[in-house]
Amino acid sequence: MSKKKEEMSPVHKDTLKMIQNDPESAEAYFEELRASSIPVQLAILRRLSGIPQSKIASKLHINQAFVSKIEKPNSDHLISLISRVARALNGQLVVLPKAARVVFK
Image: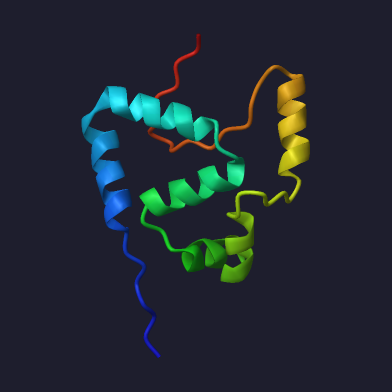
């Protein structure tokens, strides 16, 4: 039984090129991404990284179906509580790639 390698979709390839080559568009993209739910942020970051759900599942010692559930837009898994605490601290919970540049205003 051979495992099918998950490849990045053309849309995600184009998005990755835009992020790498156009700082203004990248900033706008990440600003919009920050407004998305944490599960959506995780799914997009995973896809842009070219990492299949099965690899994340293996690293976390969970099954791929659970990763899929975590990435659903209205998935909770305690994120709502953490987000409420962040908002109480006048902050927000955000998932960013390690190489992302963060500028405080």
